[in-house]
Image (cartoon, rainbow, N blue to C red; front, side, top):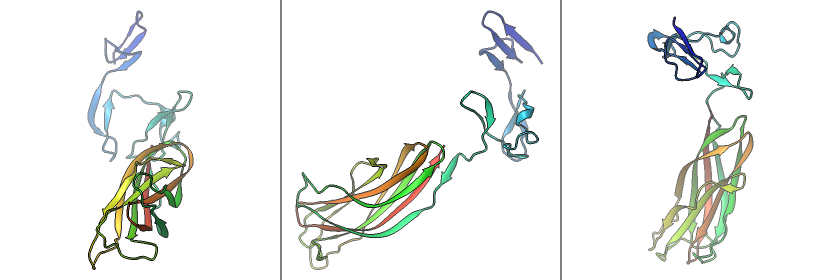
Length: 229
């Protein structure tokens, strides 16, 4: 093994005479597999007995590699926590009806359709995939739309009271004739949001927008959520 140092720059090199950092260990990956992990051992390597499976219960053991991390003080620790979590799916049948105010410049405000929560034990980027279903009618007596005028249904997802998606149109619904349909219409959206430790409330929001008579019934909301650390 070759060790070199530079007094001028206070740099130490292992297997290199020209260290580029405070401590520079030169080497390449070898053809030696670490168990069945699919990871190749680096030569030369650094061995710390305090991190092996005998001395550290956080070590994942034979045939696996355990991520190395630093604590708040900069001490090296093993991080055997998963790098992602998938939350139980949320699927709820609802019956929330909202009547439009016949204005597309100053429409009725968003109304909360349903809520659910997720709890994080670590800060994470959370992927939220949502599906919202709705039915569109001419009025609250559930008369079918037949006039051929456009009706818009908007949805929004908020987390802890703050909108994380722009106004998304579920569908521009226009129909005419005796066989006109009321739906159902569906909106799918996937968004990423950075969240801290704690319990977070996810709200499904919706509203109708139309210059014509319109009554929308939101009938179902679904959510799949995954956290990435």
